[in-house]
Image (cartoon, rainbow, N blue to C red; front, side):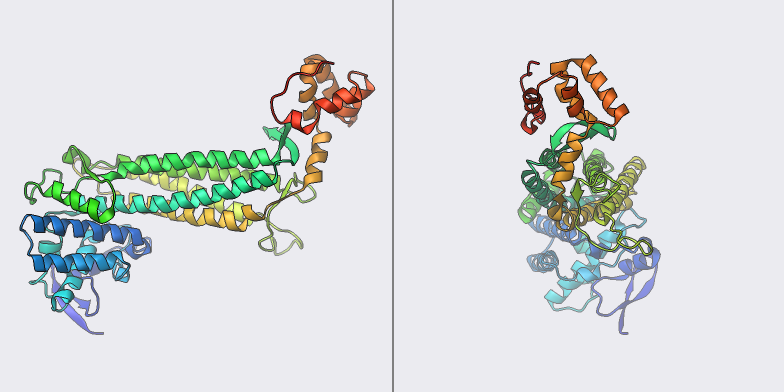
Length: 468
């Protein structure tokens, strides 16, 4: 394998000749074989890094710190990366020591080496375009890295919300399809009062719809950045006016209303926006898991469970029990939720671990949020396409359970009173008979009155009382 020799503070190393990354990236690859998930797994993150470097180059050029020729090459290199090129040259593990320095240098080296090619030089000829002196000019990891993260999270939130909207639409469609399917509602796993299956599905759609606002609201926290803060927020090694120019250029490149933090020393170690957003992601996961629990309960059986709905059959459910089919799609979404909940705890610990003027735990924090979002996007698409859209209702079974339920006595309670209704319920349980038959047997209501009270349309929404 052909190599080129590069050097850094530690010494010299041989870098693959065709690699756009350099010696510091190579050291990071050797040092951090941790989770096996590379920067290249998250295209939006790499794009965010390129956008930050592009904006910085433009701002430095505005201030006369970079020549037009060098700026053009750097910006062209960044533009190509944003378009999806050279992502395979970002091999650094997402979890790393050094507060993200390896990630920042990976970006600096790839952008520098591609810019060198554009300028007509060879990779590694850094005297013409240097990763630190030119690509990292007026920056440090401590402002470039978190700014790139925030840009990536804003773009990833858009994808997450679109996936959520699509799933909500599927639940709502089932709500309409099942609007006339009468069934028993349950509280504490006990018979409660009748409702329709459509109402149940619509309620799931509504509860998930609430999460769109939560996610979007919390993602707006990422619009505040600390570009120009350099090492700790004092702005050392950046010229007056750089921060404002850099943020203005970042707005042009990202088409986002990004603003500079009011106090850069406060903003540099602050990870509060990640904590807030991660909590919103967790809240979505908790709701999804609850819904999947409900789907598994409602489809339990088919002979010895609730059996109100049928989930699409995805695969054989047992290596020993013929005919068994399991609710594998809701099960996998449950597991995604558990991982998201755990990741949120990781974010909490990592945010708390910040010391003085920097939080060095951002890599694991970011990895946790990225993973949660990716798993939820994939999980929601799977739930929608391989479960929700194919659900069918066991209409007659649902209706039969309503008629045989003790719970329908609640519907006659306003007419008969609590004492009489309790007595009927107790008899029905003791004698294994229906509430309907016992009311008629005791002559408490005429059949016409009872049928009026127990009509489906009366039992699923508020109605005026019927006189006995």
